[in-house]
Amino acid sequence: MIGAWKFGRWSVKTQVMIGVMIVPVVSSFILLVFFYRNIRAFYVERVQDIQRHTIDMVAGDLEDFVKQCETVSEQVLGLVVFQEDLEGYSGKTAYERLLLARNINAQLLNIKLANKVVDHIYLLNFDGQGFSTNGEWNKSVFLEGLPEKPVIDQPGQKMVIPPRQAEYAYVSHSRNVPLRISYVMYLNQYTKSGTIGLVQLDVRYSQLEHIMKNAVLGEGDFSFIIDEEMRLIYAPERELAGRSIADASCQGRKLAQLADRQDGEQAGGDTVRVRNIAGSKWKLVQVNSDTLLNQELHKAMKTWILVLAFYIICATAVSVSIARGITTPIMAMIDSMKAAGRGNFKVRISGSYNKELASLSEHFGQMVAKIDRLMQENIQKEHEKTALQMQALNARINSHFLYNTLNGIKWQAIKAKQMPIAESIVALTRILEYSYKDTDDMVSMKEEFSFINDYAYVQNMRYDSHIKIQYDIDPETESCRILKMLLQPIVENAFMYAFDKEQPENIVWIKCVRQEKRLIIAVRDNGKGFAFQGMDKLTGIGLNNILQRLRLHFGETCGLEIDSVSGAGTCVTLTVPADL
Image (cartoon, rainbow, N blue to C red; front, side, top):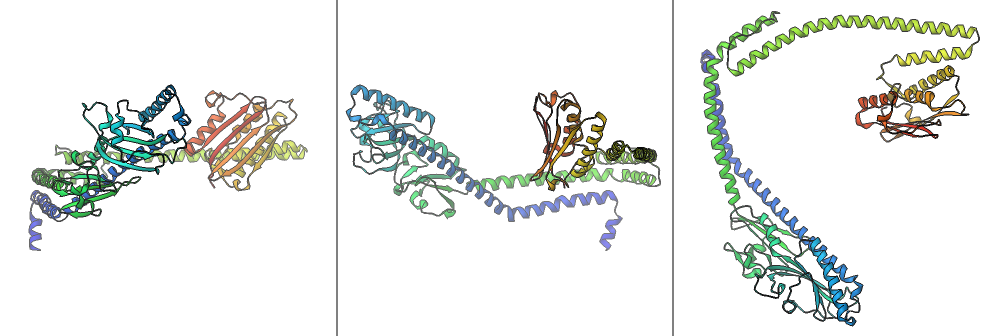
């Protein structure tokens, strides 16, 4: 208590300096303790997520690579199976064989150009001849490099030959011999002609290297791919590609031992991750060292130390600046606020202060000015409200007088036995009552149809016409609510423009159905119609007004469609949300 009392006796300047200094110092120690205790676990999980994501991404790219090779295989197989010209190949003349070779080579070239994953395609006959997209291939060297030569009674099979020097690719050996991975199919069981015995697709090893370069995240990481016979389809060092994994090593690690590890298992301080490549018999093995983790921790530690040092320096400077300039403006603000509390809204805070207090002073002045303005506006609104209430009262008196006058005329017509006139006045009265509502009020479909009936009755009496209104209404829609007087402009257009007096029967059909959460209203007539060219071509305001009201109230969930043909009538369809 004594310590607290002494602290309270200190000046505001001293208290602010001490308070602002304590915050960065204490927070700095807390953050450092948190870093050493928890940040390593955070970065371990982060690095592991990156490693898992990387191997999954590379495995996905490899699966796409395998799928592309399978696609090319199927295309070539389709060419062989359905190539009728191959039938009776042995009986063809040399010229016919030449034409056939050109045709098949052209088709193989098209397949190669459409699938960039393939380097070259080779088809081999049982007689040792063949077709290829490679015009420089050495057939004899090609045959020597096959696992087995094609024979007529061989079983059909597929195999993948690991990376090897494709010496058969060129007749001349003066060129650099590339590394190729070969997809081989023995095909006699697929063909009826018995002409083609083998299909081989060569893929550049560099394409695998391009995919696998994304698997290396840091120094000490490496990856390799093996097949079911434990041969290296891809190796971190090119000279290991195609060799057996039994005698291969990388960075002093035996690859055979790493291949036996389970996914996520630790091996000599490194993490081994394994993925089986779908669509093939390949297995991807990735070895991740702690290099990436150590790099991340080093960067994080360096960043934290710099931030904390900068934070303490800035906090010290700010605390001194705040403490020097805070006491005088605070007292000036307190005096001004007391004056505003007594009702003096003309008061302002004067003086040149630091940025924060100057902003506070400015906002205080804006606040009292706004309060003063709002009070004046409230007084003005009260006057306007009183005037509007008087206008509303006068409107009620005027409408009440109008209803009484029409009611008197109705009874005079009844006494004179002029029932059509009396019924017209009753209908007109209901129309006036309905239209006095706010035009944006929502009404039920039943009320809207009643208004249409009254409107049609008055219009028929007015123009001595005999236009009928017929309804096809789903009972479930009668309680649905729509904008008031939404259908009236459509019906009015039908009365004013659709019909000729010579026409024997004039009818307006109104159909209303509900489809899920939408209300479909169609107004159709059997009038003369017109050539509809779009909403922007309409000269009247009725339909455009309807569309604007719909969009203002319902947004883009509504719609208006017009279907009109000259001599066949017009149909206007409205789509609105079904609001019960």
